[in-house]
Length: 123
Image (tube, rainbow, N blue to C red; front, side, top):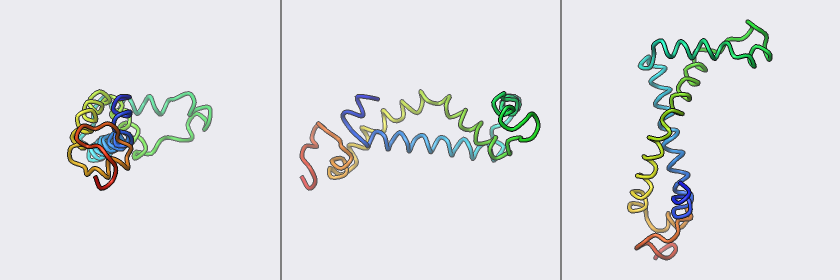
């Protein structure tokens, strides 16, 4: 990932953020639609609602996470498990985007030393 950053600049970060937001919103939508459910999700909900920090801040039984917040938290935890897949996707997408994007866009995003893509805007 460091090599991608050195070579392609902000294009790497923007691609990573795009992939991350896509995965997170997809998992959240799937959770809200009921496609991700089961005992594991119920176990996670029980663990989250019994966190010691939450009990100390709000008291033992005063606050319980809303269903939407719980769905988002479960989606976020699921996205964390997909890190290797997302990393491979970014490593594959960045060079593809470099071949497809105009030179001036790459120049503005800080890409350097790209074969066949030398010079600044308009070159």
